[in-house]
Each structure stands twice: as structure tokens, then as C-alpha cells.
Image 1: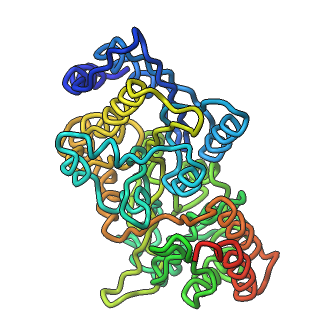
Image 2: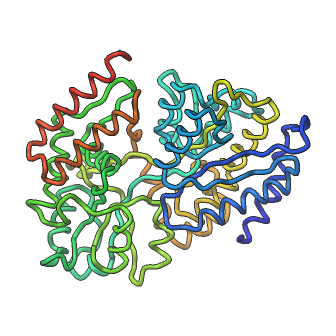
Length: 436
């Protein structure tokens, strides 16, 4: 792999404090998804090899399982069919309630409590990334790994040509810039937001949070879809492709959005910070990065707001398929390794994901990269405006309702946003009534 693997191999020698002796070899099946344009398979295999070199009794078996949704569905299919599933997996941080209710994952808290320095381990993670790691009682179920937020990417040259020397800071400024940068007949869009494809909830959350009302609450039995601020955010989002005409009706497609930006077909895009490395490495123009500015102007004039996103590390031990203590020790050692500051620094530099450990930003290669390319610091610094990504009890079912409702409005199929959100709220309340 890269030079950093040598450093990681040395680090692995330092973390073998857990004795795994009962078996000659323990195989840790590790399922992981990809959602960014980076050589993820190569990077993960490099970590697995370095870990095994320092821990010869433990072999990591990395299994690429597609998208986040495909990963979740693969695991559930295996478990429902009586299989053991993975030992460790990267899944969305918002999957926590679904798998905890099913009894297939163990709380990370039990491993953290057994660590020497467990409190320091937890405190080194950015607080925003722990919001979706904990349940309502404060128990940590999963460990941040490949974390992200949406950010605004912009073509510095195009903005300068239109007379703008700085990115927008609220939705009014954003709209004015997007309209000025849009060319007729779809030749160039002022702003692309990837709402299309059936999963608009993550992008939409930024509009709602910026407006002052996240759709998810501290109580996982409470969801806010028919709040006036949420409805206003949805109406504004829809107008981007209708009345305002700065993007296509219904939004852009997720995977096509960075390509359109790199090809000069969009002046600004909203996308994950996980696309940072790909965009910077392939752009033929100066790329700017900024906080997501899609909320109404607040007291300071800004409309910043974003959900967190991305995947956490989960330890599996399904009911009826319980692991031995040695197997659990090996699984947790792998989790510790992947979430270590050294690996997080390397992982963030290689992929563009936000290194979840605060101390990782003081280490190379990430420290050197951020000094050379300050765009990498934007998502990290934006965490001060971040709120929890959507989750709830019955999260999969509830998200299906929300995504279908948002898609109907943003695509123009459902013209009455307030009525659509009232209907969605009624369906969700019915699902969650038993938890209240």
C-alpha cells in the first residue's frame, strides 16, 4: 500500500495488549461498504495485512458488501437464515436501533468499560460523531469509523467570473449565486443537490437543520416531519428544480453529481466530504469547499447546518450464535485498531472521510495533507453546526416513509408539501406509538 502502512504495522505492535490464546487462529469476518470514489478495497486489505503481521493469531477476512443498504440487507439475510453473519461490520451509524432491537450486536460500551483508558478513548472522538453511537440512555453501541457530513463544493473560477469572491453563507446568498451561475437549457447548473434516487433524507436534513428543526429528536420515538420549519425547508428544496431552476427537477443522482461538477456542468454541488479526495485529485480547476449554507439567515447572518453521516464499527454476536470470549477479544482489537488515531489519520487522508478522533488531525499523513489542502478541514470545522443523522425506533420502516414522501414532493409528483408531510407524520406516529 502506501508508506503509511509501515507506520500502521508498527502501531499494531503497540496495541496487542489483549491476549488471544485459546485458539491457534481466529478469523474475524469483517463486512464493509463503500460510498466514495477511493480504492477502499486496497486500503482495507492493507490494514488487515498490517494488523495480522502484528497479531499472527488473528486473521482479518475483509468482505466487500456493496452499498450501506446492501451491507445491512446482506447481514440481515444471513442472520435471518440462521447464519453467523460478520464478526465486525461497518454499517450506518443510524442502524443502531434496528440491530440492537434484534439482539444481533453487542454494545461497544462493555468493551470500553473493560479498557484501560476507556474514558479517554471516548473523549477523543468528536462529540457530534457520538450522537448516533449512543442510545437514549447514553450507552455506546458502535464506534465511529468512516464518518462524513455533506459540504458545499464550488468552482472558484466560475464564482469569480460571476463576480463572487466567497462562497454563500445562507440560503438567500446561495440562491442568488446559483441563479447567476446557471446557464440556459441545462448547459450548466448553478447548484446540484443529489435528491434523486429514492434516498433524499440525508441531503434534506441539512436544509431542515439549517432552518432550525432537525427531523430527528433526542427521543428515538419522536420524529418531526410536519413541523412548519421542516415544511418550509422542503418547499425551498423543491423550488430549486422548479421555480428557481438552478438544478434539475427532482435533484441530481448521487453518483453523477461529482462527475457533473468535474466536467464543468455544475458550478456548485452538495455532496459528502467522502468525495473530497476524488474531486481534488481529478479537478482541472480550483475547488472550493464550504459549510452547507442552506438554512435561513440566523442572528449572525449564516444559515449553516448539517447532519453527520457515514458508518460506524459494530461488533456482532447474534443470539444463538454467541462468540467465544477469545473471538470477541479479537473482534474488539480490530475495532480499536481501525478507530485508532494513527489509522484514522491515514484513512482520512486516503479517502476524504473525516477522521473521527480529534488527535488524528495532529498526525501525518492527515496533518500534512490538511496543511497542503485546507479543503480537508472544512467538514471537520463544520461539526460545530452538525446535528444527529436521522434515526429512530423502526428506523428502516420510518426512513422508507420519509424517503418516499420527500421524493414525491421534490420530484413534483406531490404538489402539496404540507399535506404530504402530515400524511408521513401520521404513518410514522402509528409505527412508533408502541414505543411512547
